[in-house]
Amino acid sequence: MGRNALLDRARVGVEDAAVLASLVLLAWPVADAAHPGGLLGRLVPLVAALSVGLAVLLFDGGRPLLWHAVTAAALGAAGIRHLHGELSSTATWLVLLVAAAVLVRQCLGERPDMDLSRQQVLLAQQAFRDPLTGLGNRKMFVEYAEEVLDEPTRSHTAVILVNLDGFKHVNDHFGHIVGDDLLRAAAERLAVNVRANDTVARLDSDEFAVLLPGLEDEHAALAVAERVLAELHRPLEVAGVPVTIRARAGVAVAETGEILDHVLRRADQALLRAKVEGGGVARRFDPELFAAAEQRRLAEADLLRGIEAGEFEVHYQPIVDLDGGHTVGVEALVRWQHPVQGLVPPAVFLDLAESLGMLPRLGGWVLEEACRQAIGWQTRFPGFELNVNLSASQLGNPKLIDEVRAILEQTGLPPQDLVLELTESVALTDLVESARVLSALKSLGVRIALDDFGTGFSSLSHLSSLPVDVIKIDRSFVQAMPESGDASVAEAVMHIARTFNLSPVAEGIENAEQASRLRDLACGRAQGYHFARPMPAGGVTELLDKQGVPIQTL
Image (cartoon, rainbow, N blue to C red; front, side):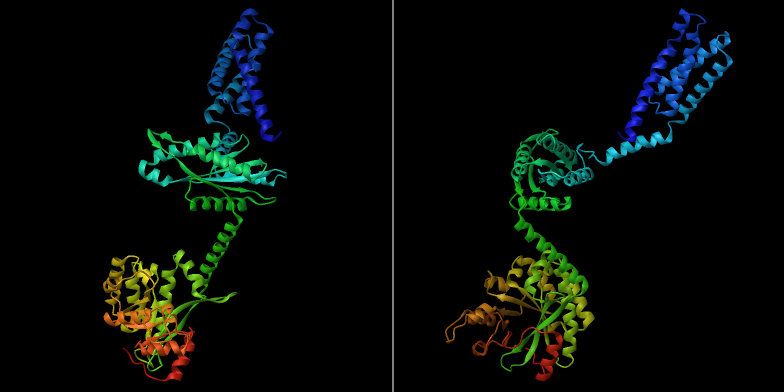
């Protein structure tokens, strides 16, 4: 038995003895009337007063009104007996001193250490309880679950995470009072539908956890989760409002020696899987999905680290004039110089950067870096063009126009020598908004290119709605060109370009035959591995030095 338990037992015993002594003291007049002047009548007030004083001074004194009544009775009785000469001066003063100590004790309040102890108990209870639902909170769940997982046992321990779908909608639509009642109802249903030795806690706003020790296997945990969801999905009335709770659950069984954090992560992955599948279901942890999610998490962390560490650089693919064969511009392409993996191509990280919301930052840096570099080339080759890609998130960035304007002003690049490219699918996501943003960019003096033209769902009406200057013929159309002079999609695209007075640029040229065929079709410019692969800025400078031909602008 611990120290606190022993003190509690002693306190209860002494207080009970003091209560008994108080009753005896109050019955003193009866005892004295039966035996006037007897020894009992003389000793009772002394013993009772001392017992009361001991209980109040040493322990909590949890019955203050009773103690005041007993103290007053002791004082009154002692005074009367002393006046009648029936109580010695020593006994009288002893009763008076004890009574005075009791009064001082009650007036000054309880002993600070006893008050602190009770406050500590209350704070400890509050620290482990959720005030809204009365369930245990995250702190309680974590500490207890860690204890359970540390115990050597042959049985399994599982964790179920339960999340209420659409709880925010309930709060927004019905108000927080109904939302709180809903949480209390959900907590009650959870608590009554698990086994007696299971532990239920509220971890967060609408997320609950159930600890299930002593399981036979994972199927038993899933059965508990499904039973809980079935009860939660039953309609209920909250504050007079009919509400149907929709919830999902994720189940993970702890492996031998596994720490709680890993179990919770696996249960959370199972919960995410239940959400992806539409909610309202319970799902077990899937190691393959978890491995994929873990790999993505690590990739995201690595990408963010690489951006902060400045590991990205700009490479440039030359754009050539098909008639003269010389370089007239470049397309800026971002690359990741990874410290372990080496040069990482954009197909590996661009979608990841887009999902993390990092493309506006990364794209803005590419634009500024490329513009600064292009100025160096223009000092020797005036009119040298720079093509830079815009992503969907960049196009939706409300600060895009101001950022492009600022970069042009800071670098001094002539606006007409900057071509901003966007894919057909990006441009057609919101045709009206795209037209507005592109028109604002055009007002700065830059030109607009529509990349991968013909691969999406565009039509001539869409093309006429967008302020486009250049269309880039997709590499798939170039690869599909027949060797003979038969008509091809690439030829049709160039015909459309001429109809709308647009400049065509063919992509993906891999051999001289394709270049010759495009030259016959009057395609003015092209880019591809046949001419040059993407290269660092220094490689472009060397290429231009060898070329030594002034740039001819369109």
